[in-house]
Length: 281
Ligand code: AMP
Image (cartoon, rainbow, N blue to C red):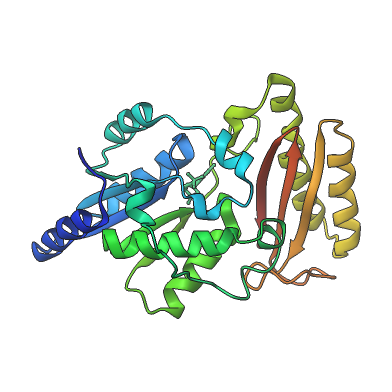
């Protein structure tokens, strides 16, 4: 497995691979790898000649310094996991290489960045859109693999690619969960055992909402109240936002008439977790 740390060198390798007619798949990550990341890598491997994983904790997308500081890092462990998953090349640039002095160009996906995660985390999606664009220009992938776990991000990256005519196919992969339903997340590593138990309220409340929609409930307020009650019953949890919205525009819904996305962000102690469920009817 090759490891590269400079965008220019990465571009040279990508050009050579493309010149040989090889397809390139990219899995962008911030490291602290878990089975969710690995599911993306397996799919990437099955569909491309060369699988690239990027590993970069992007400071630009952290709205809170404290979150960046406690973000779990395990380069050595990550490289082992990537190799075992069949990754051919890891692109792990240093911050200086991605944002050298004088850096001042940003990508802004205007509408999709405003709601939910974007409203709670000012500048977050500008950071995501900018780094994804830079990763795409460095790795030159034919396909990129992202998780539904970060639903709004996946939608935003898909929009970004379309709006800028980037020649990359975005593949969105389902959420990988623990056996008890907790969505895998690098941030789960920061939970105490009591918080780990409390964190189950995210999945529990989403499953509740899905069940009620499937049973015929159409009133968004009733559904949101039910979800909020489940979160509030958990003393260690504090809801940031709870969304019942259109899966493509992310506009809030009053009545459920077709597909609906429930998405939420919940503080469990000092750790902020997100999860979602898409109910397509
Ligand atoms: P991150 O390292 O958190 O930036 O995540 C890198 C990629 O893995 C993103 O596309 C995430 O959506 C995806 N991902 C994170 N957690 C999961 C999960 N539990 N299941 C599937 N994909 C995930």
